[in-house]
Image 1 (tube, rainbow, N blue to C red):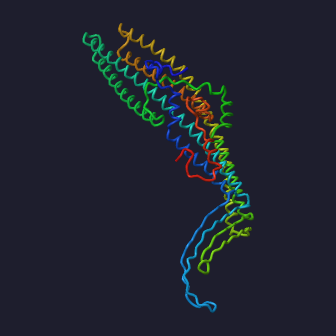
Image 2 (cartoon, rainbow, N blue to C red; image 1 turned 180 degrees about the horizontal axis):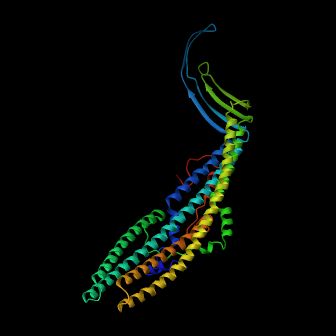
Image 3 (tube, rainbow, N blue to C red; image 1 turned 90 degrees about the vertical axis):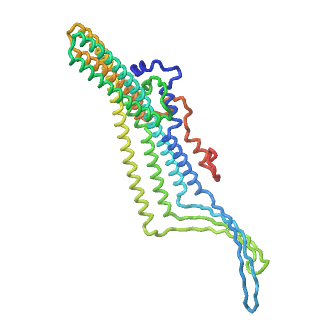
Length: 449
């Protein structure tokens, strides 16, 4: 069941009340942490274009001009001349073979992109779950505040009746003092509830981006919760973004090993230049110089640096493998944890509803018995407090029922806008990647900056 007590408290909300799904859509569009992670993903995309540049030639233009003065006798010739040597040239360098470093750099960059996409998805899970918590906490704290305010009104009436009975001699001064003390405590609870609500409103604004206004009841996400714990664990181990991100990071680490090993392979490149020169030896001289050179470099010994780097990277790859297993254990534990919390919350809702009903009957009975002198004022006050506590417990249980249903889906790695069909256009990291991965030139980003 959805949060019944909270729904009753806000039953007067207008038809345009904010829904939990709408609040999650707001968080999805505007949460700063999520938008920052998207920017990081776009930044990572450019790593592929950087790696692809290893396949392409490097072309440069150069130009120079100067002044040279010569005076004297050179080879039996008197020389007294001023030259203005200068020229312009074009050079092209193309790598032919570099030990497959470019291939492996591209592979490493692509794996890093895929890893970052999963990190973005994990950020989305975290942001949406935090938004659910913020939404439900505002609802529950609002309902709790209203219950405490109503309790103050009831106790004020209780105190008035007790004073009337004291004035006619039916009760003692002790009864009046007990009613006054209980009312003072209730007013203190109202102040505490107001403070808690202000805190949750601030957290709501932080996560969702706007102040909460007329929130509709939140409902559990049961339709996305598997029927069994084993099924939930299996989904989590297969789809959780942290696991997939760690596996891509492992792929990137292995590619980096190949990049480093490539430094020990022969390097083959071709360089071509063409230049127009003026005033090279005598005034008015002009000519074209052109060359094309193939170069092969075979590393013999690099002082052991490259070998150490390869060994170092292999140890890092071993660490990545261990982290994959570690994250799997963490995901499994998280799914089991939230599953247990959800089951407990379901049981607590049922128990709290029964407790509220029993305390309502008990309070009515104690009041009737107090009217005929079989119960004291303290008995009535205690019964009233028991009913308040049970109603608050019901609100908390219903809040937890909703939050932990989302928690199970989040722990499985499926609390995303796309999977849960939030009313918002889903962000596609692939669009930017496709726009930039093969760009040869251009300073502007795809969005025009």
